[in-house]
Image (tube, rainbow, N blue to C red; front, side, top):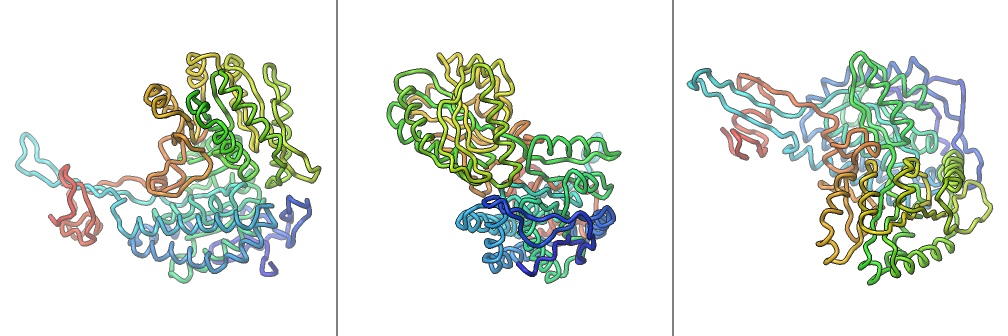
Length: 529
């Protein structure tokens, strides 16, 4: 830990600010951790953006193999530094070692997934329409297109994931894979961990002989220095994971620029779970156990925490809720990531308990220790839920709201009132799932990932995963922030018309020197022309 300097990385240089020092806090003990950290100055933020702009052409020209080597190098350095990363992260977040080690593994997996993707090259969606000079009444031109990097990207780290959604997380990995420079805003909740990780990336940039502006890490308040970066004319896109308030602020800033830019903000989600009677009758206890585990995993500080539980009144449903309440009552409290998150959780519980038509039906045990969240289960009825949009506001932590429905019509009304979510889940027998196809269609309309007979927490990184959904779960519901499809957020299409073959990117040349699968005159082909 003595190697921590507390200053930003401005390309290859370190920040020089000495004002407004702050420290990371161990949430389990409410004690400050050494050393002091210093917010980047406005001049340093501008320098990072200028360096990124200078690096853009060189990064855009990198081959897939070169980018893959860089990404794998970062992963290898993270693997070697795992002990120091875990040691610092457990102090700054209160998370157990196993969680931190698992998240580091996921972070390395993301980097290597993107390395494999760009090395192969097919993701570029190379398309060729050959010319036809004899076409009447007008000749047909030669059109060839592919995806190009969008340019410098700002990444805002998440509070609840010190690795997977942080300095070397999915946004950074996908932006590097696309060929974009990255300016990261480190999160104050785990800023020492961020500094260690930032140093590893800078080492990889140097070792791979990439330009200095390939990466910078800025320390400081996102509402101050982050907003300055978001307004910088060199910036071309933003990746953000956090609150709806923070995401909307960035969206508004980006839209107000003289040249607006896209913001890919993952913000809030309550992840509804619909329970059908047959499933409750046949395996209600198992569902209750799994649901409580999902609700309290990571002290409920996951964006996929199941915050709404929708079911129709029946004997099986009543028995299920009794079991669920008993399990919640037996739950211990848990350390939240920061004092601020804990205060927001307590405020959310108090406000919900005071709402008309809502009551607390179960609450876990309190240890009386600082920054601990007590698992809490609320209940309401369908009419109250549909009439009160505030019941869809996320309470970030181990809390869920049971919504009692009188019949299927009320279930449909609840689902019809839902805002966008990252996930939606249904538990049912095979027969019920066949009978309720319309219900599953409703869930598909409001979520990016629909889970059948499972639980939404735990996001597997893969080529097919979708971690996104309609607003407000994501600012742009057409995208994902996890998985290989995340790379498309930081690209744009370019078409080359009537280019000489030698002047074309290698991916579009007649000989197909990279052996890509290309769409040629509407037919998929890996052959040369």
